[in-house]
Image (tube, rainbow, N blue to C red; front, top):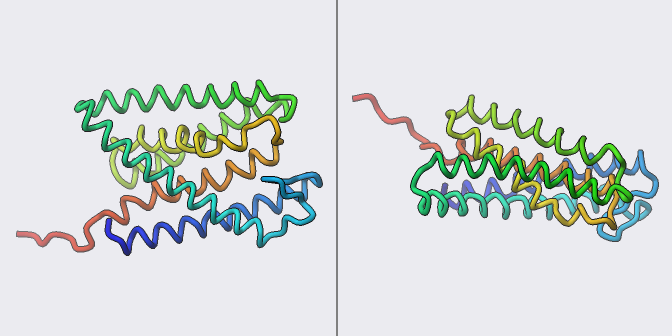
Amino acid sequence: MNLKKWFFLFWSCMAVGAVVTAVTGSIMQWTDQDFGFMGLEAAGFNAAMMALVGTMIGAFSQMGFFAYLTLNYIALSILRKKYLWNALQAYTSLFALLGLGYMLYENRASFNNWLFWALPIVLAGIALIVANIKVRQTNGTAFVPTLFLMVVVTFIEAWPALGAENNTSAVIFMFAPLIACNAYQILMLHRLVKPSDEPKAS
């Protein structure tokens, strides 16, 4: 990974966030006339502003992504055994899904009654799909780290949208671009770090 590749990942991730946020926000406006986010109501929340928010979400997602890469490096240095770190990530991913469902259930007065079980199931399903794609493109050791990134890191990044003062539309508006950006980054990483030239056969 060099500066040029990181620069490409940074701006392309922000572009993904902008597009997904604009599309998701437009759908939210069509389905919920009272939709608002971060104090902005639907009347003044146009596509350009949604795209701008999406670029910030994309940048926030990349901060979480590089924070995970740093955590992964430190954890492997401390634990020494890779299977221990993978086991810890797997258990943490499961607890994060349960914690997400619990938080939404506790705030069910603000959210729809179906969100507390639907969102964890959808997040787990997307995480499994992305992890399987990552494994096919790389190797089997990428499965658990990809699950951890897609579940735990996304959950932490979306924490501000899970408060009781928000609604179902705000939660979906936050989760959709974060999921898309995290999936994009993890699936692009091995393409960016691989050697540009194949070694010559001896």
